[in-house]
Image (cartoon, rainbow, N blue to C red; front, side, top):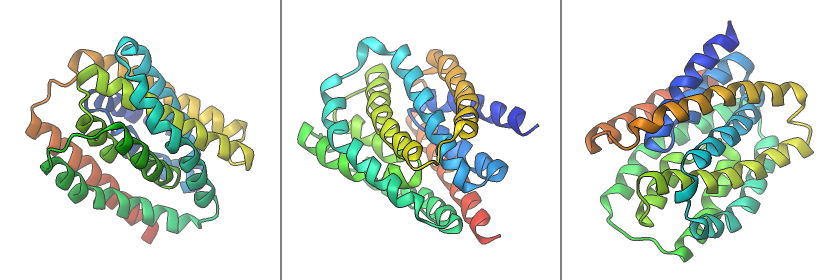
Length: 240
């Protein structure tokens, strides 16, 4: 029953994230925490994130901006490995509390970023890759920030979805490698991650027909709602 519920939530999460470019981790992580605990949920989500980003690259392969992806990943990959090492030494309640606070704090941060019509360059991507890569190593997903970063670089629609996915894929592979090295990614966790990721991949293909059809206001409202609900859920888990 646990896996059935996770697969249903994963399908919905994959569809939503396939439209707006992120959100799968935000929607699915609280479910994984409740089902398996935070120490298993984070590496499971890391494996699942690899699959969902791979599916977006497959869908929008011709539109990937490999130059932007390479610059971001150049600093994001080692930073993610450092962040994952930090995560492995934190106690479970600290992880849950940090995740919840991070999600909620990203609401005003995202609004602030959206209010600035700033065009980013490759140098900015390199700097932001290091910062966001480290955060991703600790808090599972920084999609609410990486999305506006690649949008402000000038990417839209399929190019945005594919390039953000390619850059994120490199970061998550680095994180998963650290988990594997330190024994946090045994066969059981890997299997759970593959099962979870398969539902996310299916959702990504369903979402293709709906890509970027949301009105801007609906997009922002959906984004903030996902962040708030997931953040409050994680804070509740940390306090119980």
